Image 1 (cartoon, each protein chain N blue to C red):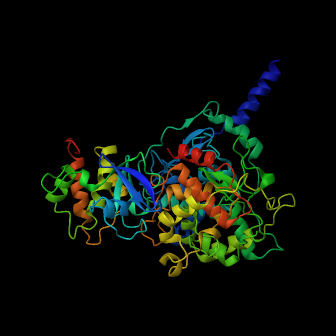
Image 2: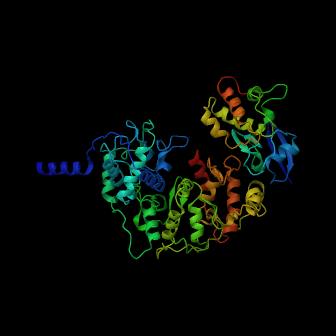
Length: 157
Length: 412
């Protein structure tokens, strides 16, 4: 066990962790942030996607050791059920979720893109989102939701 | 004096001026069998690997090629009249392929491998021409090259050509098998393997004295293709054929980086082509001067492998650990047996971890996520040290941290 302080959604979180623990386990089991999901554990599906600094990463494959001093953001930082953020609102309006398991990852990957490129075209969105899978097949609605946010100028938070 | 000046002028014109070849109406009628042969030639020449940019139209160019002399953009080789090769006759195309001169007479940069294409048969060049001219025309003007002075002056390429442009179309050697001759033709002609796998000299020409002895491309190490059967981890014919066709082969792994699209091209060709290449390459022996480095370079102090082991179990073992389903069900090799970890250079291992293996749209194959944002430099170094220790305990990689730093800069 070692002492690691993670900066998650703007708050410093001192934790006692096995140093080889992937970030996803720390988020879910120690911080009760259950938005990010365990899908494949192999970096092949994207259900665990969170943002580290400004990059989307697979939390299932990102060791906690080495994340000290970096800003980690999970889907919980985008808004709440009562007050969803712009991207979450678009996902609701476009009814982009079927079972919902992939959605937290989809949101975070899309958020990272929109923060870097406020008005991506469809080809850019498709290429960027290719690493995240939805087994229900709601990709078309997910893409529609992202395009909706990409198509206006409002704030992303 | 006047005579010298006139002779100098004539010499300069002879050297640096090439006539335009008359524009033609785009030909439209081609024989179906010829088009099928041409498609294979274009695939074996990897034309699309450079002449198609990511997300761009097939063969419409626009891929940036970063060279030590500046950045070049590949050009549009669809039969578009204004921006492609729609006005090129077969003689104009053949001159470009053999001499590196565009239809309008301007010198092409040797990043276009005409030093190899000139060794192709006239029939293959004609077939490739037919295939290219039969494709859809895409309007895509060439991007402006950003070459540094003096290489931005195209006629200067004529001096380069004077030094390095030689070699006739390849003819089969009677004492060798048909497959060997085919392999040599593919390697030295259309496949232009030496473009990456031979070291380049200071002005970007392949060192013919170090033919296929290893080079570099886009930050990757292009391994030596000589002595492949003589190494401590030798290649069998079957392994090499599988690898060349983008397979995952026991004992070596799967093509990554710039070799991945090349292997996907080869996978679309009949298996006999990769078999021929393997036949030829495995016949190439190490030159007498080159022996695999066996000199032991012990680490200055015993490295601590615990961090690397922890990182491996955390980030890698899900796919690469001994019990991982990809190992037990899919039969992928242990990392210690891959070419990347066996290589004297750490570059290919580090590049693979940083960039991953992107998925190939439309075809099954390995998909490895990029770890550039998940691992910091110290972690990457610890992981590399640990895995190298397992692959080659006597020869730890030197200069890991500076290599990692350089690769991070290159990918920015």
